[in-house]
Length: 260
Image (cartoon, rainbow, N blue to C red; front, side, top):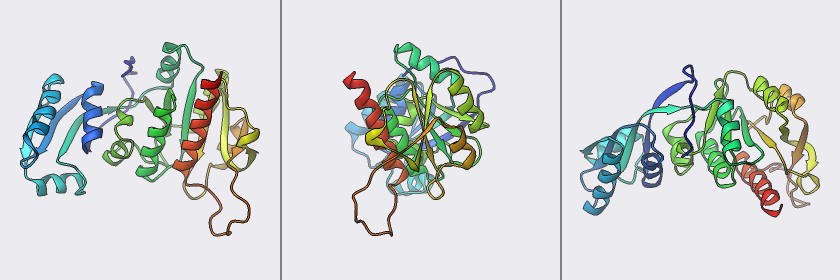
């Protein structure tokens, strides 16, 4: 995981992460972890693996009954393991630019405007990470933060990809544009993706599940892009799920960069 110099004022919050892959990624990422919880019925080789990972990062291991872990996580899908992250450190915009500079690549960011479903945010972070984005930007208000569900849905990518939580998304867009990053808004009224070049320094803005990007967000973006759909479909479904759209757009950025 990239190491960044954090702003002392950067927001921090603790969270419970569960599931084998998310906990493994969290422990391997070097993130601060207080406690690793393992069910008392988990196979010994698995328990030994997580105990070793916990020891490397200085975390305490506690064995608990499966029903207690289920209550802690709020779900039965914990797979016998959970971790209490001491803090989720949100990055700054400068951290995201530093990540791009460290890789000698043009910046590639994903901005989420009002994403409220943690499963969607987690899936967006996962696609962004796998497609080479240098960070995700979310607002402090009007959208979900990084929670255990987000961490689980991202398969642990949220522990590895810098995520900036900004007080004003509009100002973040202005700042990004001032640093020569072209900002695209995913919107039904935009140009087809097949006719859009997502190469170079680029940021993708994805709107809320119901209303899409806000009016000010649309206005601030340099251009809008839309995903074509097969003709003749029923009018009951008129758009892609936001996390699916994010995956398609992020992959197109990756395709452009790989091709060049």
